Length: 247
Image (cartoon, rainbow, N blue to C red; front, side):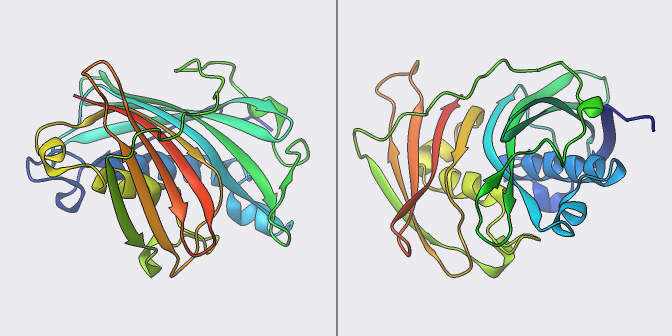
C-alpha cells in the first residue's frame, strides 16, 4: 500500500475565526491544524475512529508553534502535515501553514501519545502507527524539554470546562487550553500584541464541568516570555504548562 507521507488541505478564514482586527485567532489556526491531522489519519487509517475500535485513542502531549503572520478573514490558507518520528510512547507530527503566495505563515511540531480507553494510561505505539508513514523532516527541532513553572504570580484567572469544549474522546479538546491561556493575559497585551511563539505541555485531562485556574507570570523585559500553568481545581491536578512570546 502506498503511503501518503504529506497531506495538504485548504481552508478559508471565516468571519467567526477572526478577532476585532479581522485576523485569525490562535485557536482558529490550531483548529485547522487539528482538522488536517484528522483528515490525514483517516486517509491512512490510524485516526481516533480506527483506534477506538481497538480500545485506545490519540491524545496530544506537546505543541510548539511559531507564527510569522496571522491571516485575514477571507484568505485561503494551505495546511500541510506529516508524521515525522516515532519513539516508544510518542509519535511526532509537523504542521505548516502557507498563504496564497505559498509563503509560510506558521510552523509547528507536536508530540502525541496513544492511551488505553479503560485505564487512561499510555501504551506503546508500535502496533498502531506504521513505520512506512514517517517522513524524517522536522520544521522545528525540539526535543520537548520540561517547561518552567510560575515563580512570580502576576495574574490569576478561572474558567469552567464547557460542553462545547469536549471532543470525540469526551474530554476537553487541546485547543481550549490555549484559549484559556490567551484569555488570562491582561487586556493591554491582548489588544496590542499577538502570540508569535507558544509551547504547550499537556499534563492531564479535563472533563465537562471542571473548574480551571490559570496562573500567569509576566516577563520582566521584552526578551523574556510569558510563563503559565493551568490547574484543575476539581481534581487538584496540574493540567498544562505554557511558555509564549508576544509581539
